[in-house]
Amino acid sequence: MAKRRRFLALLSTTLCSTALLAGCLGNPPSSTSGSGSSGSSTAAPAASNTNLEVKSISLGFIPILEAAPLVIGVEKGFFARHGLDVKLTKQANWGAARDNVVLGSAGGGIDGGQWQLPMPQMISEGAITNGKKVPMVVLAMLMSQGNGIAAANSVKDGNLSVDLKTSSPGFFDRFNQKQGRKFRAAYTFPKANQEIWIRYWLAAAGVNPDKAVELLKVPAPETLQGMKNGTMEAFSTGDPWPSRIASDKIGYLAATTAQIWKVHPEEYLAVRSDWVDQHPKAAVALLKGLIEAQMWLDKPENKDEAAKILSSRKWYNVPLPVLQESLKGQYKLGASGTPETDPKMGPLYWNSDRGVISYPYKSLTLWFLLESIRWKFFPGTVDTIEQARAINDKVTREDLWRQAAQEVGVPAKDIPSGSSRGKETFFDGIVYDPENPQAYLDSLKIKK
Image (cartoon, rainbow, N blue to C red):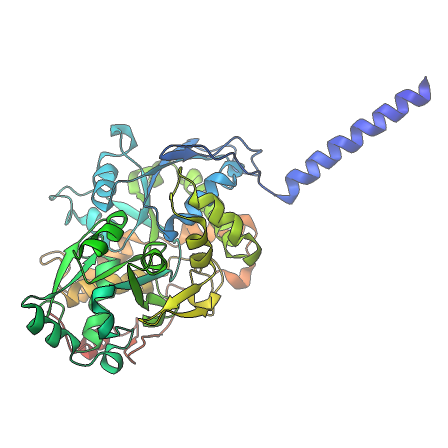
């Protein structure tokens, strides 16, 4: 009898030790996908930060690859293991996301989420919210690259590519004369990432986007039908939409943003400043979960599982193969649809040749404000480099990311110590030196 009691005691101790070790190894559980347009972290053993000021946050997302770290953070339990229940809600469009963050979760909206830049800066300044200033904080970059400019089959003869000077000299003038109207290029929200990419692409070829092209705003999910109907000849947005346009043979992938600027800044996680100020521990917990989700997403062995999660009706409702190819950097480029596979040119979530993707370098968030000056997007708000720097310094915070990275065990060598990533070079040879932004603006031949 004594031997039996000793055996049971030993067995119990072994099982408990195994359970504790599994928790320490930090393999967060997967949650079961359901239907609907929103989700929140399922219960999971919290690894740290159980003494948070608040246990939940409401975030918005748009179903493109930039949102993947937020979705994976929820589905794989990365946020939950740090004690935070992230309630993630699909937004109808970028305008709805803007309006919902102005409301805040207390008013039935959201506390923050995924953003094109400089939306958080301009929401903070009231420039895109009818004068209502809602201070926000940029906390992390969600992803680099993974965006593209798709062209319609109707302009296949134009052979549009990243380098329009070489592939399509004179095309836009010929098109406008033949059609009796301007070439139409679309994006999902004005005066932000996706319009900036298409403007840079055109201007680099000597095509003035304010004179030779008609620019349109079209929500990403409407692009397929828009391309079919001939609403636009080109569209700039995040994958999976450009890749789906190519895979559905509605159009072709003229250029990827990785071709325009390798390891470029893309969309960011930003949250209302009042939420961050009231809940600094929870803000760090949010970043810890995000960092772990980005690390997980960056691993090649996780791409297929990530695609399966994202493809569900609950999240993106996009065919699985399209997402698998997009996440792996598998593209069909140009009018000929030449297959190319290069993970370094696809979406990047953590590692890159320029260091950690997630870190919110002020030098990179500043660039979007410089482009705003270039195109006179926000007169009276961002007219000078001094104004741009002041807004950037106020909205972009790096300290919370560093704290989260240290607490989650990111190696010291991977944690940036400064606010600049250094000089950046574009495909057309233009150099952006954050130490001399005026020289960058002066080097741009086409501006408003």
